Length: 506
Image (tube, rainbow, N blue to C red; front, top):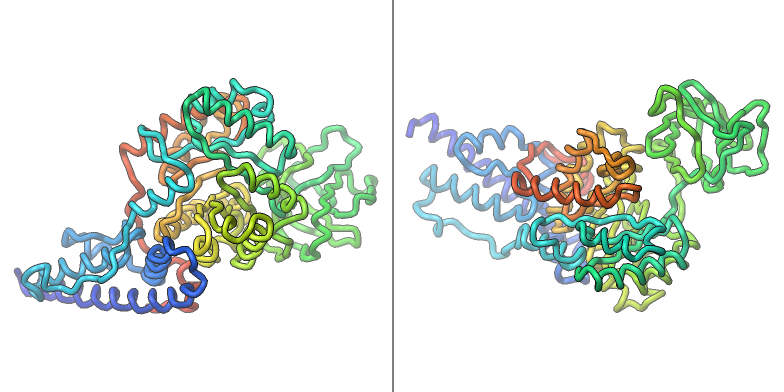
């Protein structure tokens, strides 16, 4: 070996030793902060691995990755599920290659053995149910009202590949939900297939409650003005031809001039141009269609730069939980922003079903805001410390807040963080949306569905062609898993990881 090459190996060896030691020390220090709250023993090693991963991802190690690859060593791009073992393996190999040790046994080994992806698979099976034999990613389907009336429809969904049925508590009522559950259980017997039941608690989503206009089908185009108010009695149609009413806006007064306003998951974007005692005037800056869009009730509203606090569980949610707790295999919660929200959810469940039963309930935390992404490790630790946990990437609201460019990055980061914590992920919102609604998929959504195969579960929304959508998604997932399982990443420093300690170390 040439002296230059030997010096390079020595440098790599010393650098990797230093990184390994720093990750070990910083990760242990972070885990010590979490440890007192972890009562679920099966999460202890996973929590520690997450701490090590965050310690590693505080750093931008892309230059190091290319140097390791040059020598045929792991570039750390698949290190999420067992961080310390990957670092130790690289250090041992460098020690052998540089002559620091003569055989592998001469290098100290970690006393803890992290289970890696097998642990993630175990957690996914326990919470989401075993996947079918021909694919590893499960398919979740949002049930339409038809499921409460048509047992044969549910049998067809099961035969085509539905593994989890989602009941959206933002729609219909408990009478309809219970009929869905009854029909689904009968359909499972007919189809000879098991299917988990997932109740999605609506949460504090801000929606359009009513649209007031002299026009029967009011539309908004770029440059148009509309009035946004919480006052249902305000009807100044002379000055404001379209008035959008949302009762939830009473809960905060953060909307200022130039505050962005997003309608229907980004279909319409506008900004506040004037404040009034009864509300705000919004000017449309961007719409999805050149001819404008119709403004309808029940569409979601987002305010990316406005801070407001709403109770994580509404009165309706608490009532819905009384039904869901008895019927659901999995409970999902929306618009969770921090560990305090998790504490409220866990306390409410304990009050309603008892502490022992509450910690056995599998939870799904939906990530819908940038704030939730920034606090993702904190959310995971708070929830998984007591309950089996999965994370849902709710890409509609998340895109409305973060923007579409940032969304592509965020969904990758969420996958990495969850794999490090051995937490299964549900990929949701607009998967094969055109296919499910019209029967014809777009090229873009075919690529999107392929990427969704990195998650442990993919969710389809309801639509006229949902049966065909399940068949297509099943085929896509089978094909994609033959070509990839997760993937190698370029490890720049993660903002999420930096927040755990404050300023990152170089």
